[in-house]
Amino acid sequence: MTTGTPARALGLDFGTTNSVVAIADGAESTLVEFEGAKATGAVFRSALCFWQDDTRRNAIAHEAGPWAIAEYLDFPEGSRFIQSFKSVAASPVFEHATIFDKRLRFEELGGLFLDHLVDHAGSALATRPERIVVGRPVRYAGSRPDEALARQRYDAMFRSFGTDIHYVYEPLGAAFSYARRLTRPATILVADFGGGTSDFSIVRVAAPGAKRRCEPLGSAGIGIAGDTFDYRIVDHLVLPMLGKGGSYASFDKMLEIPRSYFADFADWSRLALMRNRRTLAELERLQRAAADPAAIGRMIMIIERELGYRLYDAVGSLKRALSTQEQAQFRFAADELVIEADVRRADFERWIAPDIARIEATVDKALATAGVNEAAIERVFLTGGSSLIPAIRALFDRRFGADRIATGGELTSIAHGLAIIGQEDNLADWAV
Image 1 (spheres, rainbow, N blue to C red):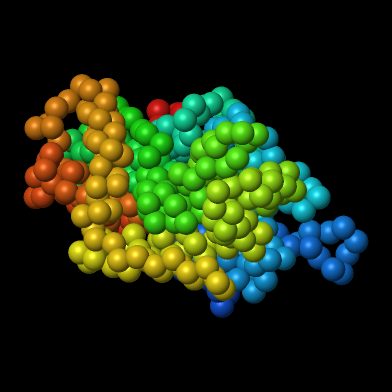
Image 2: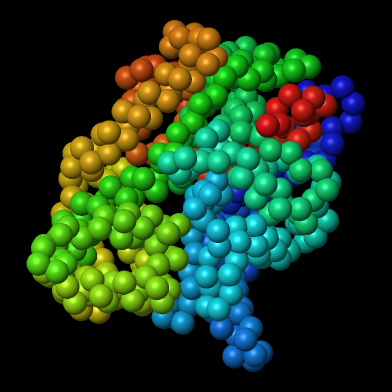
């Protein structure tokens, strides 16, 4: 793929839900395996946990990845647990997260996350390659994402991580990884379904040994993915128990409870930030005026007791079960609060049908941007955790035919490919 000696390169898939690192040195791209009893192989959960350090005055201790989850589960009410913070990278509304008495900007959260990721990689990242390729979504999450702001925050986050940082669309990383499987030229569509975004790239792959193996033709993305599907489950099964659709008294009128509370509650990146004096005081006032104060009390309990992770773990378990079963049980239990429901896959697919329609329209946009039609796509590579959802697979089977679909490496293919791209002489052609 290169004319000279390939550069040693690191590929980092900084994901909404999980992060993965790979290092390419010559012909091979190798995943970095994390070390320790709580390690989960090459997959590092994109999470942070903070707690007050009693050994030092006004100090805050912190952890990341699976170690953050373990710290939270040991002492949830004394912790601040943050997950999916990548979702606010392009949000002008997000200025900082209040952690106890400290305010941390996005880049500060990201810097702490990277420090722990490196520490838990042990010797594998003790000496990092100078050339580092970081994946980024085609379109950032959020209703009105600010690309320039996201780039500014990413630059600040990765400033201490390496000296030669490049950003590449995440599905292009997956395309380079998948191209290793191909033995003849092909035009491929890569569909990457992450936690925060769904991204699509059309790539023309040359025969093995070609000087330029992959040529990008066009890309498109949308801020709908795994977290959105989680929200649909929460919206239908949980939020009605927490007051959604209810009313409260305001002077001599009964008004609908503001939907903003439920939008924040159903978004991982915002739920963790609701545990602050101002929000809790507002909810306590709302509880006193609500027609069903017990429902608002349940919401307050989940926020105060830091039960968000447990709630979304239950949601994720249901979603995974419905990927292999026609029906599964949802169960979330915390002290006196128990929410149970039998859910059919058909129900879940009905809840996410408008999201699937918008995803399909984004596939059309990617094809139009590349200037090709469905018939020109010889292979479709599906990657990312949400690609395992049957409704997603059915969309591509219907559009392109099951015989053209390929899968595999759902959580690791992007990092593999980003490291391979880092060895390209013409790296500037891929960076964005």
